[in-house]
Image (cartoon, rainbow over all chains, first blue to last red; front, top):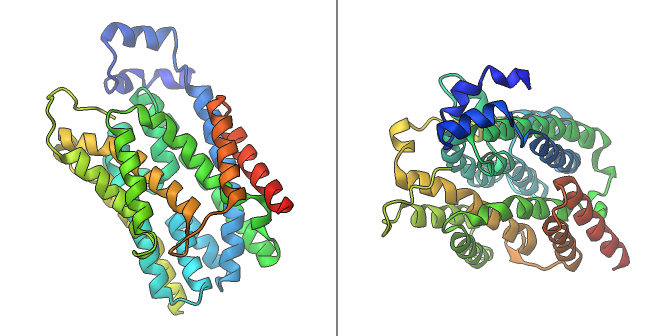
Length: 256
Length: 102
């Protein structure tokens, strides 16, 4: 805990607690959520590792070399886009088509930059490595915390552990190759179950349930008619339309 | 070689999109509407990901009962305040067992 003491003054400036609460939190309950956040990050990393094995195996089956599969996981580090890229190749599509699908899916990470920046508050060159860890899971974990300090810890704990196991998993899957049938392990249920667990606590935010229902309907409607990635981006449009529309009350500048 | 080039562009551009997102100026980030949008983006995107994971197979509607049951079992575990590891294990084990049974 002493490690965190050094940062308390700077970090607590960003929280929305009263000065008395801040002092109390800083002395009595240094960082109460830390253990719970660490456990959640470990759970997410475990699932990412299993998913990395799946990605590695599919990548090899789609014609990538071990080095190419690993390169994608290290540099791109955004699961859905990587699955889209090798999925298009595996289905006989061109690398250019794979690139388009991957970038359509990856565009949501750009939108995630806004909430992540508000929680993590990277300065200068910190943006370079903060950006690398911006994905669904890290964003959801960061915005779910009560204050910026816990949010930062959640972001990096999730990001670093997930990145490690995703990369190791990719290498393992690529080396084992297409000999394993990952579908048999029920892994297809892992991502939506984890996403649901990450989504649930966020629905308490003002307007979030309405946006979630609208996003579900729009995405569902677009599945058969739009290219891969577009149905998911359409959900971002829903959030932007609702979030940027004028409000009746003036007091709902809801900080993340 | 073409594969390496496209793969490298995809990977570097994926990072570039993330970097663009965290590089927005503070004046933009402090705007109330931007903040409100920022709070709504994760639930919107997570919902869309869940919907496509459950019902989208290559641009066609599809329903897999073992998959739905697995996610449903994970949701029950979540409501019982289980950890994410437990949710993960419950979901994949349920899905795998039902796939075996089918």
